[in-house]
Length: 138
Image (cartoon, rainbow, N blue to C red; front, side, top):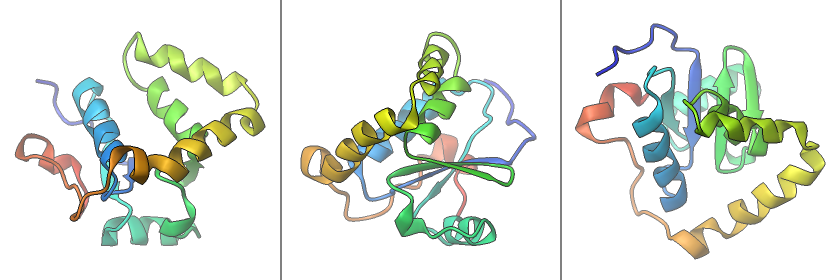
């Protein structure tokens, strides 16, 4: 098993009540061999604090966001940049960053708007299973 990456400046913020978002977190957890990502549910104090330092609010992000240092990536940019840090073949999807955001984001927004209806909603936030618990911010 890979050792945790010492870089803690890469945080995926996700909707902890969304089944699709939780599945995305599981997808990343299982493929992030470098253990470069940490996770924070949008509903958590950690996400609120982190976003507050960046001048953003959790409710205005969409379902997935990526914080890299002092940069906040949202919507399709966040998802594609996450793919870019995963191993091959997943990193190939980051080439979609070449597609203008005005064409990518409407697709992202459609999925984001319908995610609860299509995939359901949790009654509690997802905070990870014991194996990856240390990668979740409280």
